[in-house]
Amino acid sequence: MKKLKLTAVLAVTTLCGFGQINWTTALNNFTGGGIPRIGTSSNHPIIFITNGTPKMTMSAEGNLIINNLAGTDERPVYVDANGTLKTQGFGYNCNSTVTWYGGGNKNMGTKNNIGTCDNSDFILKANDNQLMFIKAATAAGPHAIGIGPNNNTPSAMLDITKGVDPVWGTAFHTRIYGDVAGTIETMGAMTLISSDGFSYKSSATNPSTEFFSINSLGTAKVTGNLGIGISPAEKLHVAGGNLRVDGNSRFNGTIGINANPSDGYKVDIHDPSSSSLRVATDSYNPAKIAVGNAALTYDFNVDATGVGHIHSEIDLLHFKPTGVPPNSLYPQVWIGKKPTTNHTAFSFAVDGAIVAKSLYLTLNCGWADYVFAADYQLPKLEDVETYYKTNKHLPEMPSAEEVEKNGVDVTEMNILLLKKIEELTLYVVDQQKKIKEQESEIVKIKVNIQKQK
Image 1 (cartoon, one colour):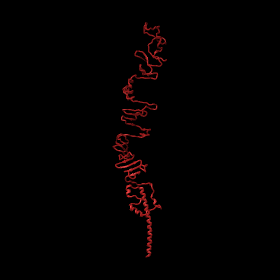
Image 2: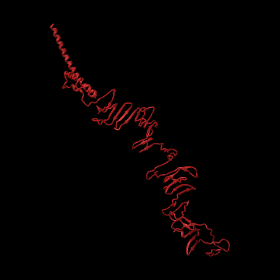
Image 3: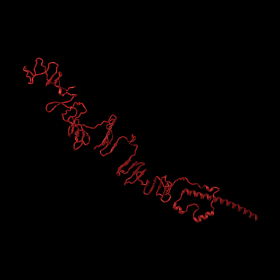
């Protein structure tokens, strides 16, 4: 059993030369003069015995051993209000006096505690300056820890305040280290609240360089590249998702490159000296788009049916992803007014003139060369004459009323015109043959007349 040892500084003088002194309960007066003393003149201890049992020993080395304080470990000793010498018990004991040592404390068992036993707050000081305040839970509020000079009103479970060192007078900051990989983990959601903003700097590169900051108004600043879902290669690099910008006023929710948000554009890729792309979608500039110049010349919108429209002061260009039967699989594009009564199954329509240097039409029907086939039945001119006198137009050709109502199929009309030209060619060739035959007959008649003279 290890005994509790207290090193006592006692003035012990051996009794060598003074002879044997008997000790009595009535004390001893040394009649030979000097100071009364008790002790040994050899390396033997002094043992104090009561009722036949050793109670206290003064070892030859000067250590004081108190038997009733002995235990199985080393414990601090204190004097109670009655002057009785006692040891502090194991662990935290609110029923005994607790002594805390500045040189460190060793306490066997699983409890090594300091603190308060009631709803009193607990304060830690250094050099008589408060550096940590642990608030006890009361009806007024829960437990909270305040770290920093005189941080007596922590507003969260852990409240770390900036401040000035009370001794050095210099400002200091808070440093938090993660694990060996630099990871700081929180269980559940974490919210950072600051009235002055937030700033990130890397001490590994340049402590004075601010890489990321958010001011008190919520404005964020990134010095380097920012990547969302990817290690960034540009100032802003987004991967694995979409980029969305929302706003609730004319000057909010804008995307600009070399632009001024106060111009009122929602998307503004602007270069006043050359080309630009500018889009406005609010009541000030409703659904307007400008490409190639600085002015919002054209309105642009897609309606609820999925049809896109580009307007100026008049209708310009419209488009939709699907057409109508039999061209349902093909998109429709029209300039100006859309045909709504006839030819609604178009792919491209123009309400106005078309100017082109060249135009190619691909045919879904046969060309008119069949007119020159040997078995082609060329209409008789008498029948043709009868038809156009009755109908006021050539056979197979549309009437003026039909053209006015339905328009003209250019491909079909070109085939019909070619057919009529080829038929006319056959008529002319046949007529030419007859003319030559008649000329030959006339020559013969003239010869016979000359012979009769």
